[in-house]
Image (cartoon, rainbow, N blue to C red; front, side, top):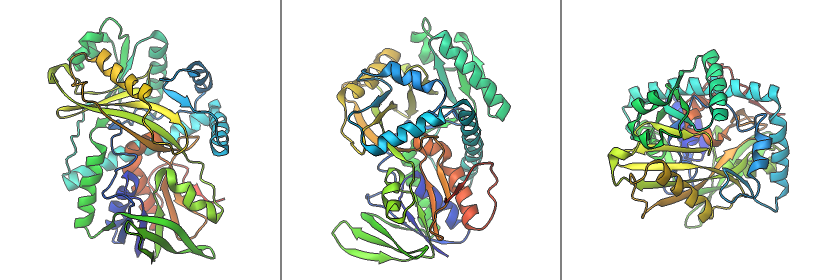
Length: 419
């Protein structure tokens, strides 16, 4: 059948690949000029299977309170807040209950592990390159409290069969010599051995090339103004090109992979998607002294900052800001990332020319992406992946393809069922 996908980010391009591989004719609609120019353009670059714990957990409310009033806090809630943000925040608090956190952690872990398997298979099949490194992700701890939390997470990962191991200071330095400067402060780390890193935008671009070779059509510089419905089915997509030309695109089935903008397209059809745009920041810098920069992807658990190496570039990413669809760069938050780079790896980067970026992560209160059939019979969701968009991309797309083909996905996950 002919399937139209709304959005050419990681979710949309991955869905296009897996659907085309099962024989469907696929058209992808994207408002930008190329794939993955928004949320995934300059993200942290991690495939972080070892981090299934959702933001919403029992310790989150007190942590958020401690961060209030700090301009460079890892999480910033801008005021005044509109109704959608307040409602999302209340739902987030509900997901912080221990039982719900455990349930959500298990669901994310199952999907992440499945997605990691699918990514490896895809890479072997296509041979795509995207500055990938398979050295794992090192979660660094600089206090006994953080180390204790890491040990608890390690136990959970072991129960789930996800590769991880605890490292003392000496083992950390052996794995990543660039951490020598931090030796007096580092109390330990957890290595997510199933994790990887790379350039997500380059991955999406290369996978889109493979999709085109497989017959997928990409329509760029074109926005979806609305989803048109006739009764309980989508009858077409109302498109508007960059030059203002309007037309209707019709297909047999449709996939909504529009990230933070997904709720806006479904609101007229009476289905609420609890997705809020959580703004993240990054800076990408050329290396001045490559031997002083890490090659293992890093996560600073105390400051919620991640770091990945792409050849002669280093990317520092992190922070979360709830401020609607605002994409303005906050210099205080940009400076926090730059200070982190200078503190952690002095002299490694050309800090005189930082390339700052910000993007909106489509985040649900539970951190569970929305995958499955909508209330409109021929419209399906693959959206709301939050900070784990790349980690979950291949598994989500494979599962979606299975659902659309009338098959049971090979992963234990609460797929969306319209209410």
